[in-house]
Amino acid sequence: MNIIETIRKRRSVRTYTGEPLRDEHIAQIKQFIGQMKPPFNKKARVELICMDTAGEPIKLGTYGWVKGARDFLALIYEDAPFADTAAAYMFEEVLLFCTSLDLGTCWLGGSFSRSDFKKQIILGPDEKLRIVSPVGYPSDRQHFIEKYIVRADKNHVSRKAFGELFFVGNFETPLTESAAEPFFTPLEMVRLAPSANNKQEWRVLRQNKTLHFYKNPYPMFDTIDMGIALCHFELTCKELGIEGHFEELKDYPANDSLKYVISWIESL
Image 1 (cartoon, helix red, strand yellow):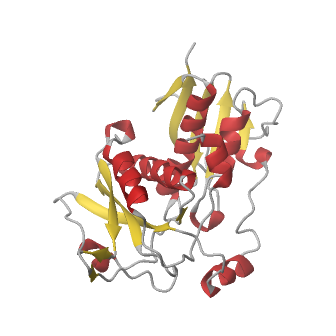
Image 2 (image 1 turned 120 degrees about the horizontal axis):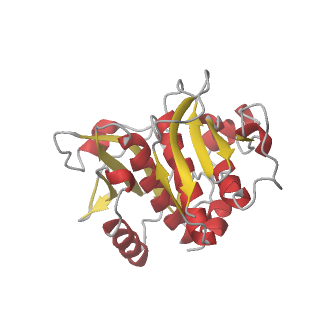
Image 3 (image 1 turned 120 degrees about the vertical axis):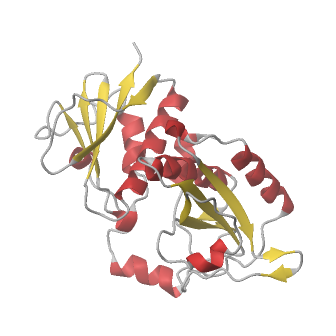
């Protein structure tokens, strides 16, 4: 898939046609998730759950936040440091793949019945289920919840300006689009990344060929949002042929209001 094109295309879909996934899409998704390896040496997996199994419908509650979905993706991972971020990176990669198939998806972190979903999967002693997403065929009609969310938050589909999120040298100097090269497009894909309530609580500081990633330490889903942002950044770099790697540094610019997460270092 073309990552940049897919990221620009991706949107949250909460209203579906009610049609179960066709066999070819089930096969493609299972093949994709079957070959995935979680980043940062963490343990995580994604499972596809179908509501119609062997002719016996099952209940998967989303408290009215999703309508018409017949199939779901579930993110399962071990409870360990940085596991939330690594698992979210992997899950976003799966959702982008589904987007490339013209399927709708939507991150759900709290608006689903964990008890319903846990009945359909087997959790290991150290595993947890924190995120699910519907996956299916988007409806042309918006569910009233979807309309309500957009009306209630006029910024729901907007993004902060480039210079509000990215800095150069220090946190007092916004990074301009021209000065961001060759990282402008990878950072722009970070800017387009979904986040809880569209808060975009991550920030990036560029120092020459190193980019330091930070996050607001307070929001509930900040570690999940960071994983999505790291996914967008690294996959875009790979598509553009920009080589580098993530590394947790001991020496990094400190910031009183932000928590350092990780750095991306361009290969020489």
